Length: 172
Image (cartoon, rainbow, N blue to C red; front, side, top):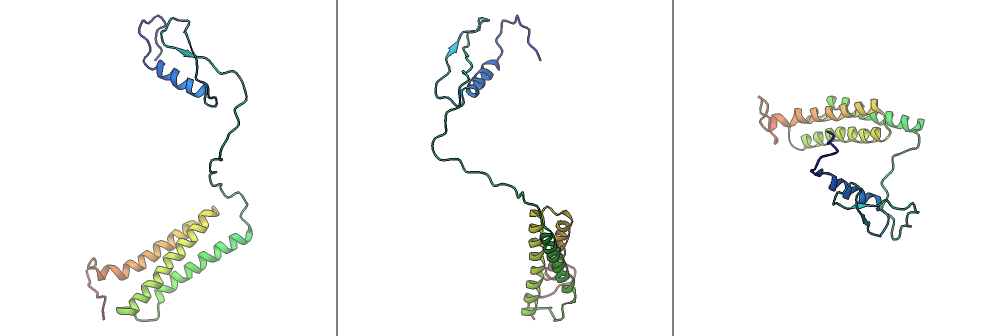
């Protein structure tokens, strides 16, 4: 909202804006700004603009650089390896439904849950690799693989902790 020019009240934000602008105009120099009187009679000091001079050279250690994004192009070999990972993980996930051993309780249950955990780990491995290579389709498949592994784990754990209607035991 513009203020009238003949207003007798000073703008409350003008002093703060002037102070911030003075700090920005002398960012690189070590000399303090010298106040100048304002032509409109305002009692607040105004700082002068710096003379155009080259910025002083930096001394001391350079600041740590930020990590850069991967700029090299994804090769055909990278894509083949990425798809191979997701297909191996999916094959493992499908084969877990056909586990050939009894895994109702005891050590065999622990072995089965460790194998199912590998499905989740494989999905996470593929998800990280596909994210780094910016491949959306493989990333979605990797997330589905993680979800499938979590579903397999939940199918075995939930009845044993009392969440399901049927109650299974951990020990034989």
